[in-house]
Length: 547
Image (cartoon, rainbow, N blue to C red):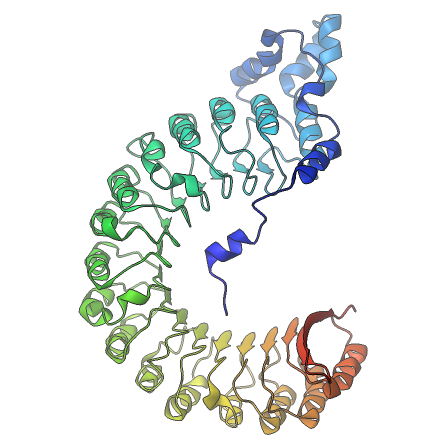
């Protein structure tokens, strides 16, 4: 089963033991309190003042030009000569390198570095020497929550900042207030990612109060922030200050429902919106209708993600007219929306108007299998690159309809048919339709009821050439394949020259063929396997083939 964006984000550990924290501090070369005292505050900030006058930045290979000029002029006293080795770009390099990162005057990437409040304070003192900074990423440092004010005050020194990422930092209401107040210091800011900060829920106004009309923000990421209906209304009111917004991601906020009507209405203030992600937002039929009315004022929308909103079931028939106005839509994700036959009939009417559609995901909608055959002939065959129909309970008629159009899907790169048992015994019908010049890179056939004959067809297709670009092949949980089928596939697998990952499910007796393939292959291939021993115990794992 596919992981949601919020689940992926939570894979990073949120809690650490006291031992981990102590060891983290020991690993640091020097703590902030170990630094040499500075001669004076005036001397510390003097390089910034001089560099501002010259409108220059800090060279990546050395210290600020102001400091270099002072050295040539011989204007430093003994106290200053003792401080200089630890200030400027040298201090920046020392701080970044002790965290295991590479210093860069334009990009500061300190995600997953176990930063503490002390580190934030030290970083704040370094910002005057990073005047060229354009991107700052402090994501997944959950110990810096509550200390952001020490940093935001110094954002005035990085006025060229365009990208700010603070995902998974346990931000508090005070942090949001400080960040909102600091938005005036970063007039060029285009990307703000605050995802996976539960403290934003109920406190979004602390941030949006700092937005000024005409803001240049183009991307706003607020995934899984426990936003409430009140936050949705707050965001709706802030959209008028974001006329250039191109991407809005409010996925995995299940409590938005009460405020989605107002938010949908105010989307008219963002006519340039290209990406709208509302995955798992608790959408219902009425909120879907309100959102549908907003589509007529979003002529540039290219990606629409409404997945994992089961309560919209049956609501697409009422918004089909609005959906058809998205003439430039390239990606439509409706997986796990509990679509009905009426919804599918509505999509059949809408999809032909999507001439630029490259991705369609209808996976995990188990009620559409019997009517999917009406959809396939209406697909934009010349542009579609990704088609996901995993776990859709496709019927044999639907499968035959799909196979009949596959040969016309010239640009198809990814096809997902996992957990559709109708594929078993009929895989050759699909493979025979693939042309030698096929661009297919990913083929998912897990738990499809495949048998030995199907794998013989697969081996034949490998030899024939239409799978020459295949990089990922998924064959997990197809117990009907015997040793002969696996052995024949592995003998022909040399034709899969681009293959990078092979997911398989093998019985113990089949591992010999896999070992032979591992030994004979000269390429690096990652194998995921699932097998049972003679006692019936299931074992899972991975084998990495090293060239």
